[in-house]
Image (cartoon, rainbow, N blue to C red):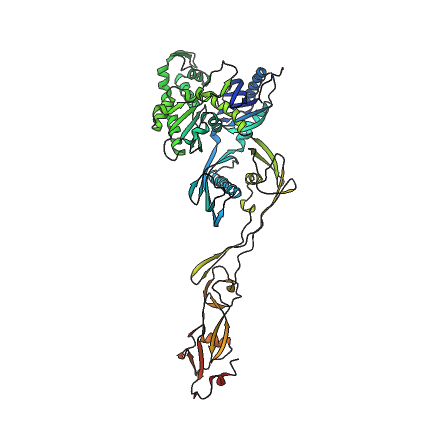
Length: 601
């Protein structure tokens, strides 16, 4: 096999579709992608249904045949391939996550990254609630639609001061068995996966340039088994979705009406645009002819149903409103009347729903001029172009002695691995000790516990952080973060507390310690406040409390004066008030100090 030289690195992309497999080999030079060779092979049986591989062996054999033909054209072996996953199994969760600071804080990249990870974690939790099966889903990517600073939308949070930051996050998930099935079929053909993307992402790479994404546009990739949908607005991809209905549904309607097998029905459907009358034999061997108009009448109810479902999904993904325009790619969208019906279902002018083909492939050049550019080539070329955007594949790492398989987007971190294995988010970051809540003078107050220590993380035996980048076969060890000390406060630690209070008792200065009333009981400043305590800071003593502190027994016949006014034992005595005690029958000749000098010291 003679190896032919090309000016750029060759990229091999496979569009593994429900009806056929399209292999494309090319290279990128400046902004142009040159297609060196392309070959398409239809499945001999219905080895795939609704975008899902059902017969891995059969699909593997078809991939092997495509690979062999391309190798013959190229004069060199092919070892690595880029592939895309179908939308039927795509699970996309859109969520909003908010982080509040205790005080105005300067936002840096660490805060932004943590916010995004909170969004991905929340999306994973929401998916787990929706998922009532035991299927394990992997996050294969996420994007931030919008950031918010103090509840106002903003383009970039970095270096702004904020009390609150938030983000709208789209996280995309795939079941493990779907990706594993694609990998096994490819490996049967002697290939390894160099890049995995999603079909709607591959299509949008070509069909909707970045400059168009400021507009509210829908891209619909109508294949054989699924119709994948992508919505753009405000410069970014806003939503993904799909419906499990596309070209095969139309083929099945033709097969049922004409009483023929699926393969012949597919042939009739694809010949619709080239012939006014189509001849065929039904399964009983009877010859028939059907006109293009009659065939369209057969297909119309199915086309109407599919376009209505697509329109409903577009409106749902776009916030319960139609989009400004729709780009249609894929073979299923080429059926006569498809774009017109979709426009009608969306309430758009028919000119605003367009089949995209040659006009979006201006930067794709076929070295073989025989191939005609059309909408069926958008996704195959997009799969190749996505290789240049992100060279993705699966990698294996060890996390706490557990072997973990991850979808590699060339920017994996330890945080991504932790999330993949379901490591508790709270065990990565310092945990506060238990807070303390109580009432002080009738108002609720909450004291926070102390922060604990962050998780101790090592990467290949060296100290690392949660944002440390990782590579294949890395060994990661994480020891969980710790909980800080619970909140603690004594009565004397309260701002309302004063050390002492002074009274005049029988013209003698008496200094009493400050007390608090806790749950209707007097407590000293050394009392440790408990959860839900009700504290009242007293700025007075009663007469009885003063005498108790002084170890004076109150005689039954004693007279009490507070600020020279007769009072009882429960009279409140405030700071610097005077208290006088006098026995009944006292003539007043002796001084009060003499009467009580044995008790007041």
